[in-house]
Image 1: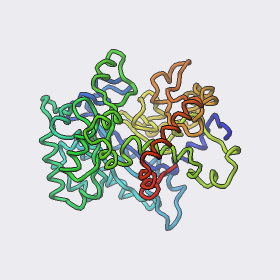
Image 2: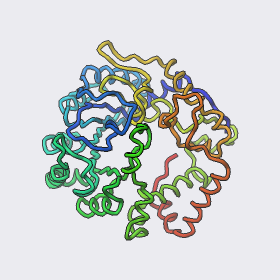
Image 3: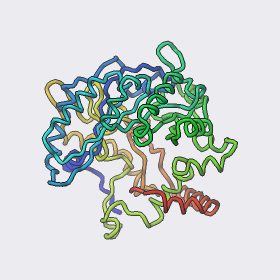
Image 4: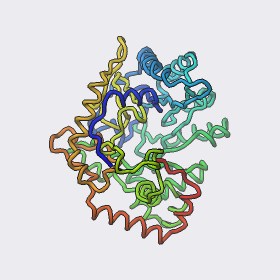
Length: 418
């Protein structure tokens, strides 16, 4: 493949026209004080929390700005899905905003967009607002770290464990709207030193009939003075599974949510030679295809995130200093030429490393999640030699030999996307 080192405003415009997800930081306020929160003392790189609420006017201006692009891709009879997501803080603390945004979207002229809605919530106020969420067919992701012990880092403003209230609200939702609960509700569990994979998975599957998504603590942006505390709290997903009393059974139950299945799917997608991201890869000589260095998403190729303070970013996971524009009472300000230059400038720092990296054509490393991206001598944590690649391939193939049933299940039960 040939390396394409830069992007232009043209690529950004294309991504805005075909935007898949718009995320609003509904509020930076929260009714919990989770010890490991990405906006808490462990981390840096985010705007100060000031108990702000997203102004509806700013949301309207963002929607109008994007709507002008969306109309360019309007084809009669074809409806393209766009997910409108509400994020926090705790989004249920600013429910009037959520309702206003949806009412405004529903008032827009036909644009060929099929709007869907999603929310990540701690469920503390779920009992008050569940009927609206059900009526609008929200995809709901509830944060729950397992049982009472597992939830003990997720405390309320008085320092009390939130488990009883959260679990009660979840059960209330399940009883009141059983079909919705089965089809639209999922759980995310953060792994730490007060729970483990076996406990989390067993509790949520046994009591709620769901298979949770498991997330280790975010290792990007940890304050230097908090590194020791972070290391004490952090738990590895694979280590936790390996330490369980029924390791092999647990991993088979988890299947694609487990680390080994994820490794195998990654290998099959990138190196089996049987997976193509698009028709160009299938039909054309790969040596003549272009690729962008690093695994950093192109601006707005997947989503747009707008903070409560009006900053426009390409993702909710990256530091707020990497904003590409902003919205205020006067409208949306985003210089696409400058946005392309900013993106190119950060990616270019890793270009030489990319040229010598064995996984450069299949990289998954976002430069904005590297702690030294702002430095001139930035180093990529994902850099891989040929030996590293061969070792990784050997691990994948050995696991396939040991558990051939995993390969069969992946082929029959999983859609692998490029």
